[in-house]
Image (cartoon, rainbow, N blue to C red; front, side, top):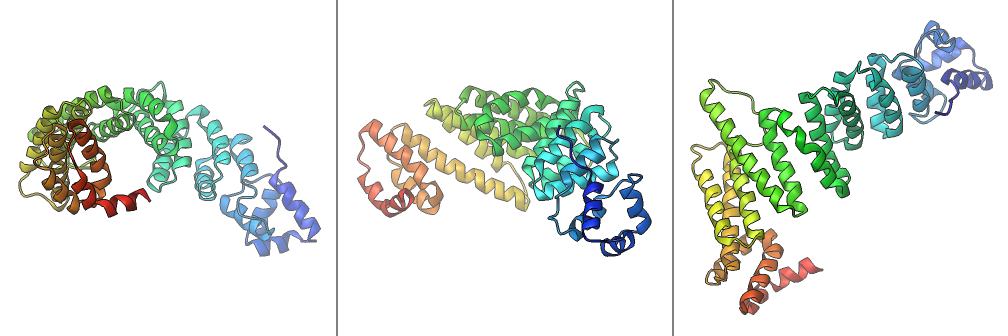
Length: 364
């Protein structure tokens, strides 16, 4: 690591060049003269707020001294959370990821602040600061790797989600690395984790894994529903969606796998299952009603699609009417319509003419 001049060396040089006495510099920075004197003598640590005040007075951009501050306060000295936490937030705000990486790698050596660092990572994750959150999660996970804890599992889940958005080329590697940790997550959070993992495998067309995870997801939902039946009182929901919807989604995944394997009758069977699950919901909330309508819409469109792929074109007009009401599905639907027509030597010119303008607009 390259040695950096002490911050106080820069301050003293600035004061000499500007012919500033300590009291005058104290007045313009708003820092108590005694405190300032102790900082310059190296007898007192500088807070982030004081650093920012001094940097501003010196006419430098905010963050100019952050690398030096990180080295002086957390690597060459024993770190203190009261200074480390604001440093992380300030660096995150300015996108100084190298500063964070350098400090965190050093700080996590003794595991003193693992819990606090995890909490900050969660805060960054919630605020959409993905890259800095990933740095913290990876450091915490590395420190926790022999603990087999729920926190380690949650770190690995967050790392998996962040790799999906930040580096799509490493999706498969992220999935393989994360999967062994699913069982250590909170029971309800496992539902989201399995769903997310299945979705990733679907995007890379690993259909055996999608089916395996769909079955696992359905089993976990059944277990959760059994727990709820035997448990009194209301428990705060942890899963992103109502628990029953994951069972419907598991069957949607099974239908998708069946379609990819050209098992269209089986796909129709699973479609009936997830639609029936939605029909069983009594007195739905607004959130549940939205999910019911979404799944029923998928069921209707997919039922037309699977029937068409089986060579039955009697319902083509009904499918086209459905697409009129759901224009976002037109492009994907016509890929399958053309595929089915080619397989069965069926004339779909009328269908193509009907949606010619829409298809041309998409192509452009």
